[in-house]
Length: 173
Image: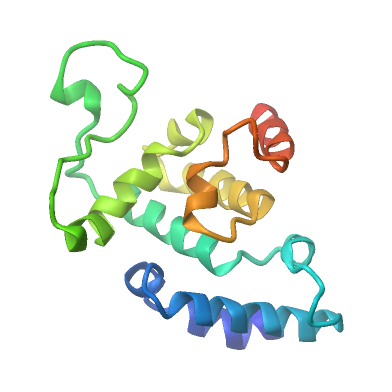
């Protein structure tokens, strides 16, 4: 209750805009420090299980969820099936326009599309209704408890040892 009233409200404010900045790693370290203090564990204790136990999203998972909610709210985005008529595996993905500038690639619009395209298909198909989409996607990020954005992009690789739980979660939902 303390975390959600004081820490979470400050961290979540504007996360969609500053979540991918260089300052986010410092804020994530502070978030882990608060979690350790709340759970009365040592500085060397891993916070991954603590985040799951408290049902708190790590900063980067919270950032990714904010991006997803932003993308789902935009009605002007096109799916690949609209852009071309060939039925491919990526037809349910959002069309990602090619850009050259690094700033544009890191921006909310472009990053949100990339994050959406990496979602599990069972969650992605719920994107037409925000109420149905929000709960399973939040459960997915609580189960995954991603510490980095790259870890989220690599969640479905078989070389990741934590993938087993996520694949079971996806099959169950």
